View 1 (cartoon, one colour):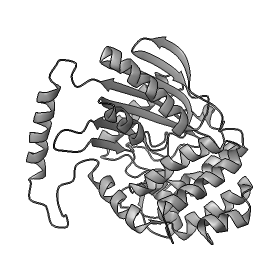
View 2: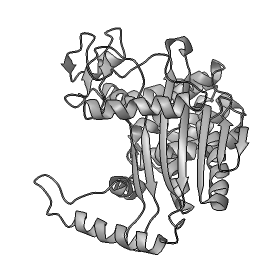
View 3: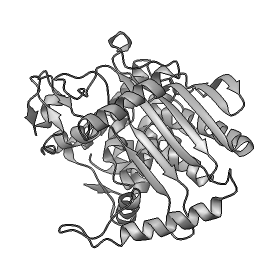
Length: 357
């Protein structure tokens, strides 16, 4: 089943609006979620809506919450998200950081206690569109850990994403690296499980630490875990997410004492840098263009059409999905239908927005 971005946004807005009682916030969140689907990141798209509805109904997600400045030290700002919609409070927090960076050529934002932030790349892109290089470390506190440390056999933390965004140059679009530090995101395992597909080899282990391609071990009592990408390298980066995103903000690194059902808390550190702080932005852009051309000129390997830089696959996916619609697998459709019922959306409204889910 495929839906247009417009229809899917209306459906997401309806479900979140009924659940939250805040239609304006619901629409902002819905637009961000559908944008994740458009760019090919279904793991962070409308498939997250059931978790948001669950969080609202359990009192773990506060729909009317806004970002609150806790400490203000010029270019250094500590913000509390008060368990609000991550798509709302992160945008508010990044607005603050961007304004500080405009004054000081630099800003460090520490955001704590936000409900699920969505795609970390949204916030890196927001800074890059304002003209700043942006580096982000983030961690996740949820109802259970899902990623095993390198050399370990059970989960000890979550997918702790990392992002770097660099503004577009005269010749090339924005560089946007946004990735989970696990081999695959938990949402990708969810999509695979709902679609009846296998996960890539090396991305999941069972309770004994043995590799498996069966995503169901992540969603039953089997006690599976995701692995970190690149073995010890991704593991090190995952630890930085907990330390710099969590511990430094005061939101905390992952801890079993903080496990709460229906909760997805994110903390993050965002570092914004003005490319023209030394008056060399033009030279920087020229060199980045020259380097990009050199890298992309490599003859493509078998099975590839071309070298793709971070951000290229997302742009290609958005063009395709805006034109041809966004596919929803049967499992995701069933979960959205259940979420709509739990949120109190009249069946006739769901039917009018999206047909028979």
